[in-house]
Image (cartoon, rainbow, N blue to C red; front, side):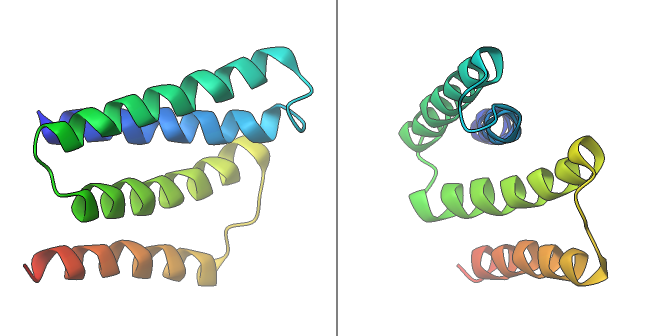
Length: 105
């Protein structure tokens, strides 16, 4: 259940972040409302994950790293943002680093 809620928190955060770009500095109403709803949902879900006993370091590391990777990939497809070979290696290193840190317990 923890990982299902954490996945939902990540998706909500990614939707909020992508909407932040679409909101044009929070000047467009609909994307701005999605930003607020996305971040609120992300933090509420993350709080439930922590309440269920997942260590904060583990939850945040997964939430942040997977969120970074998904936002970068989605930015490439949705906003035609650059995602070159170095960026892909960097994202792999971020995720790989989290896996290494978490597997060292």
